[in-house]
Image (spheres, rainbow, N blue to C red):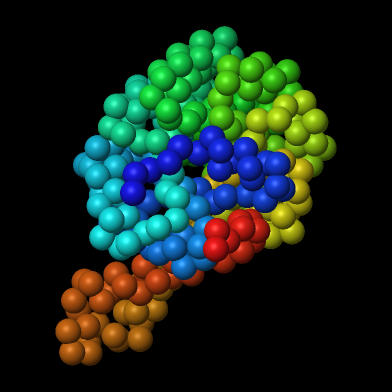
Length: 287
């Protein structure tokens, strides 16, 4: 099966008041864990790479080919969206050329007019090939591939203007951040989210989904968030599982040092994390 774009999937999520998770991959094991979680829960899955992960894995074509190959070899039958996370202008074009079915152009660090012009160009290029586009308004706090955001709130009028370009989903800043949330984090700004949801029908995206309390995520989804990004929680689950493997001296058992056995513990932890988040997001089963 080939990848699908995310246009209909996330439009349905917005209308149905549920979300579809967007899960970052970093290697073969992460790819298999994410795909397995989607298959076992019978839900559509969006698997995405950041610019940094794509560079680490050998480029956008290599990532796309890996995911495509694993979909086939694992017998995955649920819809799979292949997405670029936080791509700059050049990265978005490269991912489109490589065969991604969905791309994010993150122009929040540009002047708004430059962001708008480049978003329009990416939308025209991608839509001509049946590829979905995500844009961003209002920076997401923290750092992602060198793009640093202070976490300011998205401007409603700017969001309306970007939505009018025809983007398929829109990442909005509502107090969310990338990475681990600090103890003094004030939580999501639901007043601004309500303003945004009232102003545009475009499916809204919550970045920095790792670490936000479940009750806040559930509330945000009920208000129009249709795509939730998860990465850090997978990294933490992976790290804890592999550490436990060594702390329990499993590597000293017969063939316990085999990297396939070591990595299997982390892979299972990621799969379970993804499955848990799918349940949080209330993503409906396809059968």
